[in-house]
Amino acid sequence: MKKIDRRRFLNDVCPAIAISMISSGFLESCSKGGDDENISASLNTDQANESLGYIVKDNVVEIDLNHPAFAELNSERWMNFAAQQVLLLKISESSYRAFTNSCPHQGVRNSWSYNQSEIRFVFSRHGNSYPSDCTSSGTTGNILECYTTSVTGQKLQITKL
Ligand code: FES
Image (cartoon, rainbow, N blue to C red; front, side, top):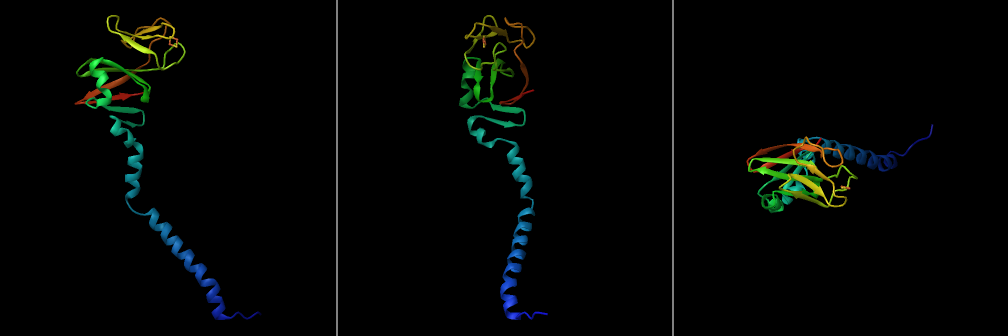
């Protein structure tokens, strides 16, 4: 049997054991604690958008109606909220409608206008238009997809499908 020098063994093996013990201690301490819940909660909401006047959580978009980014919605009574691909329509101070901004004709998302007298969205590219009542068909025979909305105070929530 080969003899091993005790001092040499300790010098060679102990640092590796010490490092592995310290590493596992670090890994364990990283996985403990209540911070994990806070991290996952903040990931569910896109906090970066809060400064832009809205937040997104799953399929719900919540808009701060007082934010300057949505001033057009108050003044024009409609806007193309391109960042979330939604057309917004103000019915009254406490009632709003929201629609996809994807034109049923070819899926293009810009070039919208709103005809107040005919209460319909008009797409200038090919001249098709869609009633804003969430039930009537437009000139292509399609209904412009409508989302559920609710207003609480100055917050408008849109639930996308
Ligand atoms: S893409 Fe909208 S009218 Fe053609």
